[in-house]
Each structure stands twice: as C-alpha cells, then as structure tokens.
Length: 119
Image (cartoon, rainbow, N blue to C red; front, top):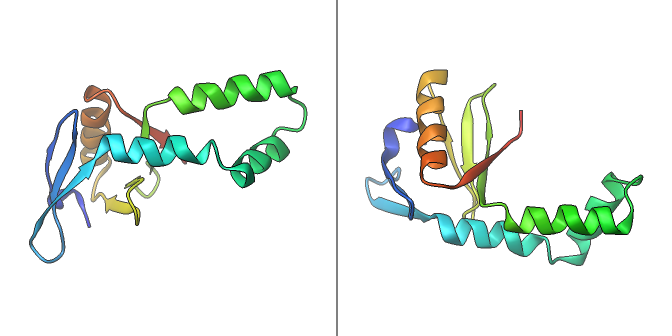
C-alpha cells in the first residue's frame, strides 16, 4: 500500500483503504500493546540482553521499563521510505516522496504515538 491509501490519522489510529477498496482501521492502542507485550517474552529479553553485554542487570531493566512505557506503534525507514505498523500481520505503507512520508510521521507524532527509526 502507499500513502494514497491513507484516509485519516487520529489519536485512536489510522483509517485507510485496502487493496480491495474496503475501509480498514489500525488501532494504535492495539499496536502499542503488541509492542509492549514483546518486552515480557523471555526469548526477546534474552536477545536484548545479548545485544547489550556491557550493561548491568539494573541498566537493562531500566531500559526495558522505558521501552514498555514508550508509545511505539510501528517502525519507519526514510531511506525507502516506508512505515510499518505493529498490526497482526504487520501493515506497511510505502511513500512516493520524502515529503509524503514526513507528513504521515508528523501526524502520528501529533497523535501522541511513536515510530521507531529503522534507518
């Protein structure tokens, strides 16, 4: 999908038109919950600790707690550019220009949610 599929972005989520011409809604609270839940999974926590070998257990726990509180609903990459939301399965939007990408990133931030920068 691309930016032309996006209809509206509010604090509750994003409304878009899918490939079949049907209105769909991405619930940002549900995306955030998927994000937050991963920080409780032992496999994910183990990978995080392995990726940060010099941090103490207290530092790691503080980082994990910060991540849980982070209102992240998806990821983005300005080099492609695209935004992928943590839906199940993930929903990805590609953008024809950096300006269009920046507009959507701005609207998600304005709605008080965050996108992780994968670039």
